[in-house]
Image (cartoon, rainbow, N blue to C red):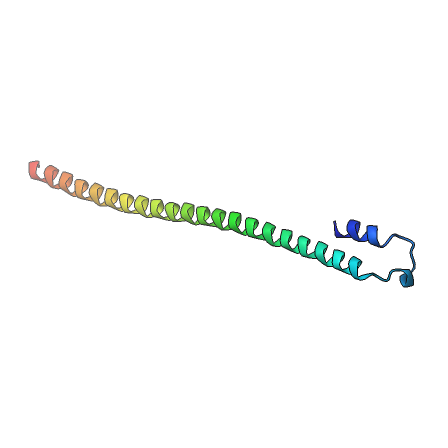
Length: 98
C-alpha cells in the first residue's frame, strides 16, 4: 500500500535528481506513514486481544482435562481397592463355610 502511494509522488522512470520532495510532499508522506503505523498498531491490538482470548480458552480446556484425568485415576484406584476388599470378603466367606 505504501508503494502505491509513493508511486503517485515518485513516478517510475523519473531520475533521482528529479525526486526531490517539497515540504508538502514530505508532510504528506509522513502523514501516510503515521496512518499506516496507527493502522498497524490497531491491527496488532485486535490480534493480540484475540490471541489472548484463545490462549485463555486453551488453558481452561487443559486444566479441565487435567482435572478429569485426576478424577479418573482416583475413581480407578477406589474401584481397585473396592474389588480387592470384595475379593477378600468373598474368600473369607468361602473359608467360613468350608
